[in-house]
Length: 329
Image 1 (cartoon, helix red, strand yellow):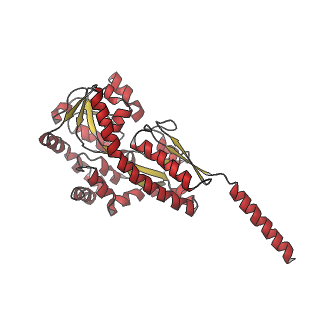
Image 2 (cartoon, one colour; image 1 turned 135 degrees about the vertical axis):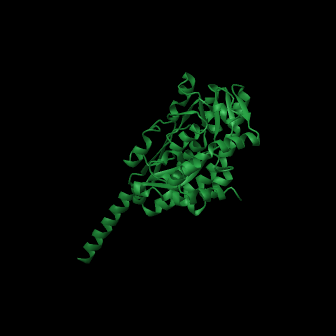
Image 3 (cartoon, rainbow, N blue to C red; image 1 turned 90 degrees about the vertical axis):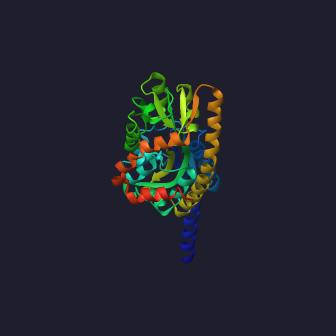
C-alpha cells in the first residue's frame, strides 16, 4: 500500500516537473510610441534582453516601438484591460489618474536633470510611483528622456514671440496653461501626428527633447529651435497592478532588479543621446538653434511661473516645495 502511494507521489511529482518544464513562458508586451534610437526605445530593448537572459524560458518580452501596437490614445486602456503589460508613458499622461503627478509638467520647476533625479529619489518622489494603485496602475521606475526645448517657424527669444502661435502639446492641462501664459494657442495632438501637423500647418510650434526632435525629423519642418530647457519629458514605466502582483514572487523580484539596472542605464544614456541628436540637428543646417541668455531664460520663467500657483491646489504646495528644494544639491 505504502509502495503504491509512493509510486503515485513520484508519478505526480514527475508530471509536475514535466509540466513545469514545458510551461509556456510569461509573455510581457512592452508598447511605446517612440523610435528605438531614443532613451525609451533603448531602455525597452535592454529590459527585454536582460529579462530573457535572467529568466530563460520563464519570461518573453515583446517590444513594440513607434505606436506599432498601441498609440498615445489607446495604450492606457490597453494596459488596464491586460492587452499590454508594460508602458512608459510621458509623465504628462497621468493627470486623470492622480493630480499630484502634474508636478512634473510645471515649467521651469527643475534647474536641471540632476535636480529632477534628487526629487524622484526622495520619499515624496517614490510615493508618486504607487499613487495610482487604486486605479490598477503600478509605477516601477522613472526614465529620463531629457529636458524640453521649444520649436517654431519664427524665432522664440522672448515670451512675447510666442503670442498667437499654435503649439502642439500632450494631453495635459498644465502644458496647455503653460502656453496660454505666454498668449500662445495650445493644441492637443498625439506624438505620431506631430510631423504631419507641423508640415501642414495645423500647428506651427511644439516642445520636445533633442532626441525626439531628431528621431521624428521635426527639425526638417521647423525653422527654429530655442534651447530653453524649460521642462522635463520623463517617463514612468508602469504595469497593470493585478498582473504584477499575480506574477510568481521569484519572477517579480528578478524583474524588479532588472528594471532598476535598466533605469540606471537609460538615465545614463539619455544625456548622451540628446547631445548627439542636438549635434545632428545643428549639422543638418535645416533649423537654427537659438541659445537663450540667462536674462532671457529668466523672462520665460517669470512669464510661466504663475502656472505653479494655478495648480498648487491640485498638486499640493508641500510637494512643489519639495521639488523646488531638490534644486539645491
